[in-house]
Length: 345
Image (cartoon, rainbow, N blue to C red; front, side, top):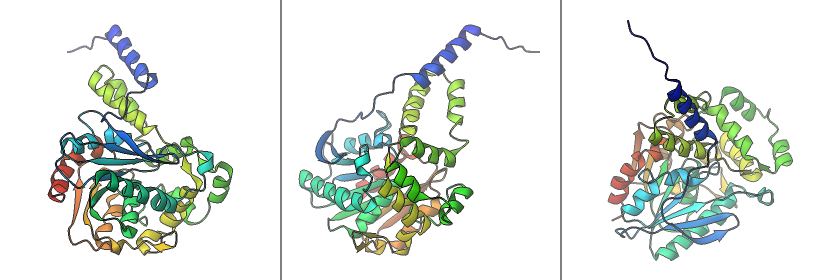
């Protein structure tokens, strides 16, 4: 018969590490060296110079509006951006910044026509390149596809990961979905009251989708609080997960009504300042990457893009990963190293 000896000192230390991890100073971010080369309102275009330049075609990255893009430069050795610069690419990242009350009228059309388009033009001038590869992650992938459908700039490659395209495929809780599609939620009232949706409300939306997964990381942390490497990784992930940013009322309205409720992008009915967004206009080499364990963006939302574009060279990959682990575990790095390398020569 065996007995378990309770080590009170070890238990106290474990709880101390747990509390320190939850309440301690936020870990450092933005590890890969970078330089600001363009600004518009709150947005910044960052340039990450290659360690040793190998490819003439630069990479332009777009992330979601809901979080800061630090997940793309998660930590040394676990960074998508670090992997790209180490492989010889000029990398440009469009950071949306933090929207203020004065930005409440900015919508998706503005973000694409006035921010992404102009930032790509600046990246092309800065790199002196003739073409660009565009990478979009999560909602940033949706924006990347919209932009590619109307772009006059030369896009060689379009890569989208965990991307929502066909929003007729459900991902929200049933009550949310029914309420939004039946008009039971007074979105205009919410937007009129807030103007810019506060981060706490954005976080609440995501909690409702990922619950009970949201609470499980704290249980895991408690059981492994003495593992310093695990704690460091956990703290970085927790900081990013809780790092939601304000969402402009204009973008929130178009996301909810035009994309989710009416699915205008797939139907070919979405317009950007009067210009129709027809995904069939996309002819760039296309790579779509989905995560099998994604709790936010099911594969059924991403895969339809393959049939909507006119690209002759197109690849769909389904990876054994989650929504963010695809970026932070190096799996996306490995995919980009092979596919992007083959398509950037």
